[in-house]
Length: 170
Image 1 (spheres, rainbow, N blue to C red):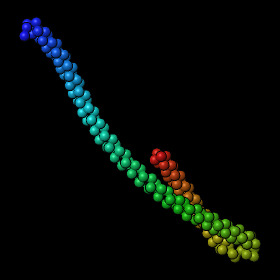
Image 2 (cartoon, helix red, strand yellow):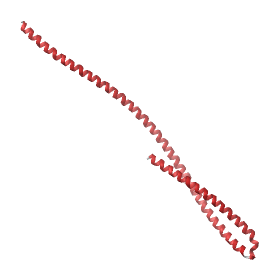
Image 3 (cartoon, rainbow, N blue to C red):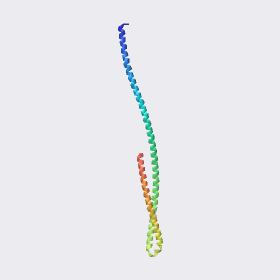
Image 4 (cartoon, helix red, strand yellow):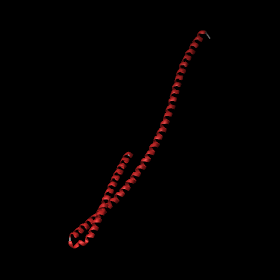
């Protein structure tokens, strides 16, 4: 082998060596980039896991709140039904008292007519009793009306709360 050939081969080896160095350098850079990407993926996975846990906690909290709202709505509905029943009972009682008052007033007016008639002065005691009964009925009616008014107000407030709860639920 001649020196020229040896130099030529040495030159080829140097060129090949330089190519390998460039390849090695690019492979090392690629490896570093892949490590960075892998680290970013690990960080993203950890962040994703953290967000998933937070989401699950929020979902659980919302489900509990929803259950609480459903219970409150059911309770408000039950109260509303109870108040409507009371309202209907009081309305019927009020009608009965009005009828009773009307009858008492008729009896009272008849008693007044009889009292004006001189023949029937002996019925004064009856007139007094009827008048006293009328006053009692009127007094009862007054209290029942006031009680009815308070129940209507309570019913309106509960209906309002129910509508607010219903709107919040929706």
